[in-house]
Amino acid sequence: MNEAHEFFNRQIKLWGEQTQDSLANKKVAIIGSGGLGCSLAIALGASGIGEFALVDFDEVGVHNIHRQIGFKVGDDGKFKADVLKELVESRCPYTKVTSYVESFEEFIKRDLEFDLVIDGTDNLPTRAAINEYCIKNNQPWIYGSVEEFHGQVCFFEKASYEAVFQINDRKPNGIACPIVMHIASLQANLAIRYLTGLPVKKDILYYLAFDNEGVLDTKRFNLPTS
Image 1 (tube, one colour):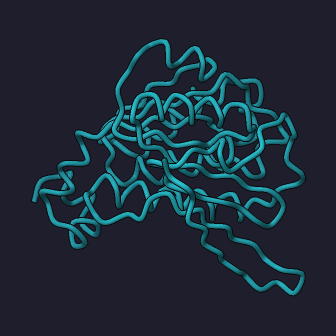
Image 2 (cartoon, one colour):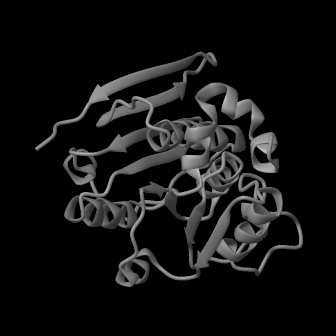
């Protein structure tokens, strides 16, 4: 067994060496290197995705660290995408990461190609821009959002984000760290299933929330497609 196969041994038991090796040829863009982006990059990097683009122009702030698990005390003031790149490559030796310290609008001018785009942002206008770009380029993408103790996930293919959500500049309320990791893990699972060729039901919005008694409820909504 070669070193890479030993590293990914438990995954190979799931889908075999050929599928695992195919992940080394996949390219994924994660837009946003905050709470969702950190968990996504760590999970997918450790799964063997060959190449990542991390897109984020923001710097780490002390108030980010509690829920953005790629950062530690002392990282404040550094660019998030750069710090996350270093972390992912240090623990995932079979992954190449490129950090783009710029906005999504600047990034798409590079005209790069990816197997999948994943939303790790925290604002609606950028998600609308991701949606517009992906529709125009027939690019599959995975949406995720979190707020308080609830979150949403969707693998968009034919549906439009803007047809479902009202776009404004509203900022999210308080956020607990575990729900961020939970939503990111669902996004990562959808991504892995898609990239390995396993079945993925697209254009279904998953809404997950804890009620006032702490019961976790998951709802599914079929989104309109054109």
